[in-house]
Image (cartoon, rainbow, N blue to C red; front, side, top):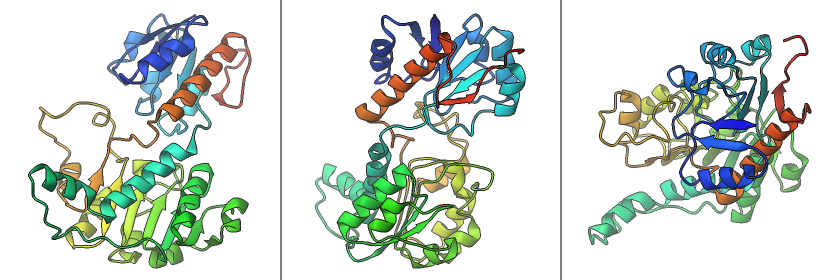
Length: 334
Protein backbone atom coordinates (compact mmCIF):
# COMPACT_ATOMS: atom_id res chain seq x y z
CA UNK A 1 0.00 0.00 0.00
CA UNK A 2 1.25 3.51 -0.87
CA UNK A 3 0.85 6.18 1.82
CA UNK A 4 1.19 9.93 1.33
CA UNK A 5 2.38 11.71 4.48
CA UNK A 6 1.72 15.45 4.77
CA UNK A 7 3.53 17.95 7.00
CA UNK A 8 6.62 15.85 7.61
CA UNK A 9 9.47 17.64 9.38
CA UNK A 10 13.07 17.03 8.27
CA UNK A 11 13.95 15.30 11.55
CA UNK A 12 10.82 13.19 11.33
CA UNK A 13 11.21 11.90 7.78
CA UNK A 14 13.93 9.27 8.39
CA UNK A 15 11.94 7.88 11.33
CA UNK A 16 8.81 7.55 9.20
CA UNK A 17 10.63 6.00 6.26
CA UNK A 18 12.44 3.49 8.49
CA UNK A 19 9.26 2.49 10.33
CA UNK A 20 7.29 1.84 7.13
CA UNK A 21 10.14 0.11 5.29
CA UNK A 22 9.22 -3.43 4.29
CA UNK A 23 5.56 -2.90 5.19
CA UNK A 24 4.20 -0.09 3.04
CA UNK A 25 5.57 2.46 0.61
CA UNK A 26 5.50 5.98 2.04
CA UNK A 27 6.07 9.32 0.34
CA UNK A 28 6.77 12.28 2.63
CA UNK A 29 5.75 15.87 1.87
CA UNK A 30 6.75 18.96 3.83
CA UNK A 31 3.51 20.76 2.90
CA UNK A 32 0.59 20.68 5.29
CA UNK A 33 -2.82 19.35 4.39
CA UNK A 34 -5.41 22.07 3.80
CA UNK A 35 -7.93 23.09 1.15
CA UNK A 36 -5.16 24.11 -1.27
CA UNK A 37 -3.07 20.95 -0.92
CA UNK A 38 -5.82 18.32 -0.54
CA UNK A 39 -5.95 17.58 -4.32
CA UNK A 40 -2.36 16.26 -4.08
CA UNK A 41 -3.74 13.22 -2.26
CA UNK A 42 -5.76 12.04 -5.27
CA UNK A 43 -5.17 8.38 -5.94
CA UNK A 44 -3.89 7.59 -2.44
CA UNK A 45 -6.14 5.35 -0.37
CA UNK A 46 -4.26 6.20 2.82
CA UNK A 47 -2.77 9.50 3.89
CA UNK A 48 -1.06 10.60 7.08
CA UNK A 49 -1.36 14.11 8.49
CA UNK A 50 0.31 16.27 11.11
CA UNK A 51 -1.19 18.12 14.05
CA UNK A 52 -1.64 21.35 12.08
CA UNK A 53 -3.53 19.77 9.19
CA UNK A 54 -6.90 21.31 8.38
CA UNK A 55 -9.36 18.45 7.95
CA UNK A 56 -12.53 20.48 7.59
CA UNK A 57 -15.56 19.38 5.61
CA UNK A 58 -14.24 20.68 2.27
CA UNK A 59 -10.87 19.00 2.71
CA UNK A 60 -12.46 15.70 3.68
CA UNK A 61 -14.80 15.80 0.69
CA UNK A 62 -11.86 16.52 -1.62
CA UNK A 63 -9.93 13.60 -0.14
CA UNK A 64 -12.88 11.23 -0.48
CA UNK A 65 -13.51 12.32 -4.06
CA UNK A 66 -9.87 11.57 -4.86
CA UNK A 67 -10.07 8.05 -3.52
CA UNK A 68 -8.76 8.46 0.01
CA UNK A 69 -10.40 6.08 2.47
CA UNK A 70 -8.20 6.39 5.55
CA UNK A 71 -6.53 9.29 7.38
CA UNK A 72 -3.85 8.49 9.97
CA UNK A 73 -3.15 11.60 12.01
CA UNK A 74 0.20 11.76 13.77
CA UNK A 75 -1.05 13.43 16.92
CA UNK A 76 -3.28 12.85 19.93
CA UNK A 77 -5.53 15.87 19.48
CA UNK A 78 -8.18 15.79 16.78
CA UNK A 79 -9.97 19.12 17.17
CA UNK A 80 -8.85 19.90 13.59
CA UNK A 81 -10.96 17.09 12.09
CA UNK A 82 -14.65 17.26 11.23
CA UNK A 83 -15.47 13.78 12.50
CA UNK A 84 -19.16 13.99 11.58
CA UNK A 85 -18.34 14.62 7.90
CA UNK A 86 -15.69 11.91 7.98
CA UNK A 87 -18.28 9.43 9.21
CA UNK A 88 -20.75 10.61 6.58
CA UNK A 89 -18.13 9.98 3.88
CA UNK A 90 -17.21 6.57 5.24
CA UNK A 91 -13.62 7.55 5.98
CA UNK A 92 -11.55 5.79 8.61
CA UNK A 93 -9.89 8.33 10.91
CA UNK A 94 -7.19 7.25 13.35
CA UNK A 95 -4.94 9.17 15.69
CA UNK A 96 -2.15 8.42 18.15
CA UNK A 97 -3.95 8.06 21.46
CA UNK A 98 -0.81 8.35 23.58
CA UNK A 99 2.95 8.86 23.44
CA UNK A 100 5.64 9.88 25.91
CA UNK A 101 3.97 12.27 28.38
CA UNK A 102 7.41 13.27 29.61
CA UNK A 103 8.22 15.04 26.36
CA UNK A 104 5.46 17.61 26.87
CA UNK A 105 5.68 17.78 30.66
CA UNK A 106 9.42 18.39 30.60
CA UNK A 107 9.06 21.06 27.93
CA UNK A 108 6.31 22.80 29.91
CA UNK A 109 8.77 23.00 32.79
CA UNK A 110 11.43 24.27 30.39
CA UNK A 111 9.13 27.16 29.47
CA UNK A 112 8.29 27.84 33.11
CA UNK A 113 11.95 27.91 34.14
CA UNK A 114 13.00 29.96 31.12
CA UNK A 115 10.54 32.80 31.74
CA UNK A 116 11.03 32.71 35.51
CA UNK A 117 14.82 32.90 35.30
CA UNK A 118 14.90 35.20 32.25
CA UNK A 119 17.00 32.73 30.26
CA UNK A 120 16.23 34.14 26.81
CA UNK A 121 17.19 37.65 27.82
CA UNK A 122 20.35 36.41 29.55
CA UNK A 123 21.42 34.36 26.52
CA UNK A 124 20.90 37.31 24.18
CA UNK A 125 22.96 39.56 26.46
CA UNK A 126 25.90 37.21 26.82
CA UNK A 127 26.14 36.85 23.03
CA UNK A 128 26.91 40.59 23.09
CA UNK A 129 29.32 40.11 26.02
CA UNK A 130 26.90 41.93 28.32
CA UNK A 131 27.18 40.10 31.63
CA UNK A 132 25.05 42.37 33.81
CA UNK A 133 22.43 40.82 36.09
CA UNK A 134 20.03 43.77 35.94
CA UNK A 135 16.50 42.53 35.20
CA UNK A 136 17.43 38.86 35.44
CA UNK A 137 16.32 38.13 39.00
CA UNK A 138 14.13 35.04 39.24
CA UNK A 139 12.52 33.36 42.22
CA UNK A 140 12.43 29.90 43.72
CA UNK A 141 9.57 27.63 42.74
CA UNK A 142 10.27 25.60 45.87
CA UNK A 143 7.58 26.24 48.47
CA UNK A 144 5.29 28.02 46.03
CA UNK A 145 1.96 26.82 44.63
CA UNK A 146 1.46 25.21 41.23
CA UNK A 147 -1.95 24.86 39.62
CA UNK A 148 -2.17 21.97 37.17
CA UNK A 149 -5.23 22.18 34.92
CA UNK A 150 -5.71 18.73 33.46
CA UNK A 151 -4.14 15.83 35.33
CA UNK A 152 -4.07 13.06 32.75
CA UNK A 153 -0.81 11.41 31.76
CA UNK A 154 0.96 14.65 30.83
CA UNK A 155 -0.48 16.57 33.77
CA UNK A 156 0.59 13.76 36.08
CA UNK A 157 4.15 13.84 34.71
CA UNK A 158 4.21 17.62 35.16
CA UNK A 159 2.93 17.20 38.74
CA UNK A 160 5.66 14.71 39.60
CA UNK A 161 8.28 17.26 38.56
CA UNK A 162 6.52 19.96 40.60
CA UNK A 163 6.53 17.60 43.58
CA UNK A 164 10.26 17.19 43.10
CA UNK A 165 10.63 20.97 43.30
CA UNK A 166 8.83 20.91 46.64
CA UNK A 167 5.78 22.86 45.50
CA UNK A 168 2.26 22.91 46.91
CA UNK A 169 0.04 21.08 44.43
CA UNK A 170 -3.41 22.19 43.28
CA UNK A 171 -5.31 20.35 40.56
CA UNK A 172 -8.38 20.92 38.41
CA UNK A 173 -9.98 18.26 36.25
CA UNK A 174 -13.27 16.47 35.65
CA UNK A 175 -11.91 13.49 37.59
CA UNK A 176 -9.18 13.16 40.18
CA UNK A 177 -6.02 11.24 39.35
CA UNK A 178 -5.12 8.98 42.31
CA UNK A 179 -1.43 9.21 41.40
CA UNK A 180 -1.59 12.99 41.82
CA UNK A 181 -3.52 12.89 45.09
CA UNK A 182 -0.92 10.43 46.39
CA UNK A 183 1.68 13.15 45.78
CA UNK A 184 -0.34 15.55 47.92
CA UNK A 185 -2.37 17.30 45.21
CA UNK A 186 -5.55 18.97 46.38
CA UNK A 187 -8.29 19.27 43.77
CA UNK A 188 -10.12 22.60 43.80
CA UNK A 189 -12.46 24.65 41.66
CA UNK A 190 -11.01 26.57 38.74
CA UNK A 191 -11.39 29.96 40.44
CA UNK A 192 -9.59 28.88 43.59
CA UNK A 193 -6.73 27.38 41.60
CA UNK A 194 -6.20 30.47 39.48
CA UNK A 195 -6.32 32.82 42.47
CA UNK A 196 -3.84 30.79 44.53
CA UNK A 197 -1.31 29.48 42.00
CA UNK A 198 2.10 31.04 41.43
CA UNK A 199 2.46 28.84 38.35
CA UNK A 200 -0.46 27.68 36.18
CA UNK A 201 0.14 24.98 33.56
CA UNK A 202 -2.51 23.82 31.07
CA UNK A 203 -2.81 20.14 30.12
CA UNK A 204 -6.40 19.72 28.95
CA UNK A 205 -7.66 18.88 25.45
CA UNK A 206 -9.27 21.52 23.27
CA UNK A 207 -13.01 20.86 23.24
CA UNK A 208 -16.00 23.20 22.86
CA UNK A 209 -16.23 23.25 26.66
CA UNK A 210 -12.54 24.17 27.11
CA UNK A 211 -12.13 26.76 24.36
CA UNK A 212 -10.92 29.95 26.02
CA UNK A 213 -10.79 28.15 29.35
CA UNK A 214 -8.42 30.96 30.30
CA UNK A 215 -10.52 33.95 29.27
CA UNK A 216 -10.46 37.57 30.40
CA UNK A 217 -12.15 36.81 33.72
CA UNK A 218 -9.79 33.91 34.41
CA UNK A 219 -6.74 36.02 33.62
CA UNK A 220 -7.93 38.82 35.90
CA UNK A 221 -8.37 36.34 38.75
CA UNK A 222 -4.73 35.22 38.59
CA UNK A 223 -1.94 36.71 40.67
CA UNK A 224 -0.19 39.68 39.09
CA UNK A 225 3.14 37.88 39.41
CA UNK A 226 1.98 34.42 38.32
CA UNK A 227 3.61 32.38 35.57
CA UNK A 228 1.29 30.92 32.91
CA UNK A 229 2.34 28.02 30.68
CA UNK A 230 0.40 26.41 27.83
CA UNK A 231 1.83 23.36 26.06
CA UNK A 232 -1.52 21.81 25.13
CA UNK A 233 -3.65 23.70 22.57
CA UNK A 234 -3.64 27.38 21.72
CA UNK A 235 -7.41 27.74 21.83
CA UNK A 236 -7.41 27.17 25.59
CA UNK A 237 -6.33 30.80 26.06
CA UNK A 238 -8.09 33.93 24.81
CA UNK A 239 -4.94 35.46 23.35
CA UNK A 240 -6.44 38.91 22.81
CA UNK A 241 -7.37 39.03 26.49
CA UNK A 242 -3.90 37.79 27.44
CA UNK A 243 -2.24 40.58 25.45
CA UNK A 244 -4.49 43.07 27.21
CA UNK A 245 -3.38 41.86 30.63
CA UNK A 246 0.28 41.84 29.57
CA UNK A 247 -0.03 45.46 28.44
CA UNK A 248 -1.16 46.28 31.96
CA UNK A 249 2.12 44.92 33.24
CA UNK A 250 0.73 41.74 34.69
CA UNK A 251 2.31 38.28 35.12
CA UNK A 252 5.85 37.33 35.92
CA UNK A 253 6.12 35.30 32.75
CA UNK A 254 4.14 33.51 30.06
CA UNK A 255 5.39 30.46 28.16
CA UNK A 256 3.39 29.40 25.12
CA UNK A 257 4.24 26.43 22.94
CA UNK A 258 0.89 26.75 21.17
CA UNK A 259 -1.14 29.61 19.73
CA UNK A 260 -4.80 29.61 18.78
CA UNK A 261 -4.13 30.92 15.26
CA UNK A 262 -0.94 28.92 14.67
CA UNK A 263 -2.16 27.12 11.53
CA UNK A 264 -0.34 28.55 8.54
CA UNK A 265 2.43 29.93 10.78
CA UNK A 266 3.91 27.28 13.03
CA UNK A 267 6.26 24.71 11.46
CA UNK A 268 6.94 27.15 8.60
CA UNK A 269 9.70 29.66 7.85
CA UNK A 270 8.07 33.10 7.85
CA UNK A 271 11.28 35.01 8.58
CA UNK A 272 11.28 36.84 5.25
CA UNK A 273 7.57 37.68 5.29
CA UNK A 274 5.53 40.38 6.96
CA UNK A 275 3.53 38.88 9.83
CA UNK A 276 -0.07 39.95 9.40
CA UNK A 277 -1.20 38.45 12.72
CA UNK A 278 -1.16 41.57 14.89
CA UNK A 279 -1.92 39.62 18.07
CA UNK A 280 1.05 37.29 17.69
CA UNK A 281 3.29 40.17 16.61
CA UNK A 282 2.37 42.05 19.79
CA UNK A 283 2.67 38.97 21.96
CA UNK A 284 6.29 38.25 21.07
CA UNK A 285 7.38 41.81 21.88
CA UNK A 286 6.89 41.34 25.62
CA UNK A 287 10.26 40.54 27.21
CA UNK A 288 8.72 38.14 29.74
CA UNK A 289 6.83 36.13 27.12
CA UNK A 290 8.36 33.12 25.37
CA UNK A 291 6.61 31.63 22.34
CA UNK A 292 7.88 28.37 20.84
CA UNK A 293 6.55 26.64 17.75
CA UNK A 294 4.52 23.68 19.05
CA UNK A 295 7.61 21.64 19.78
CA UNK A 296 6.84 20.23 23.24
CA UNK A 297 6.19 16.74 21.81
CA UNK A 298 9.25 16.89 19.57
CA UNK A 299 11.69 14.43 21.13
CA UNK A 300 13.19 11.37 19.49
CA UNK A 301 11.34 9.20 22.01
CA UNK A 302 7.91 10.73 21.50
CA UNK A 303 8.12 11.08 17.72
CA UNK A 304 9.33 7.49 17.49
CA UNK A 305 6.28 6.32 19.44
CA UNK A 306 3.99 8.47 17.28
CA UNK A 307 5.42 6.97 14.11
CA UNK A 308 5.17 3.40 15.45
CA UNK A 309 1.51 3.95 16.36
CA UNK A 310 0.84 5.44 12.92
CA UNK A 311 2.35 2.41 11.21
CA UNK A 312 0.18 0.14 13.35
CA UNK A 313 -2.91 2.19 12.50
CA UNK A 314 -2.23 1.87 8.78
CA UNK A 315 -1.35 -1.83 9.01
CA UNK A 316 -4.52 -2.59 10.99
CA UNK A 317 -6.59 -0.67 8.46
CA UNK A 318 -5.04 -2.65 5.59
CA UNK A 319 -5.89 -5.88 7.43
CA UNK A 320 -9.47 -4.78 8.11
CA UNK A 321 -8.87 -4.34 11.85
CA UNK A 322 -9.76 -1.48 14.20
CA UNK A 323 -7.63 -0.61 17.21
CA UNK A 324 -8.04 1.83 20.11
CA UNK A 325 -6.70 4.71 17.99
CA UNK A 326 -9.61 4.69 15.54
CA UNK A 327 -11.89 7.71 15.95
CA UNK A 328 -14.17 7.02 13.00
CA UNK A 329 -14.35 3.50 11.54
CA UNK A 330 -15.49 3.07 7.96
CA UNK A 331 -19.04 1.73 7.75
CA UNK A 332 -19.79 -1.37 5.77
CA UNK A 333 -22.26 0.40 3.47
CA UNK A 334 -20.18 3.55 2.94
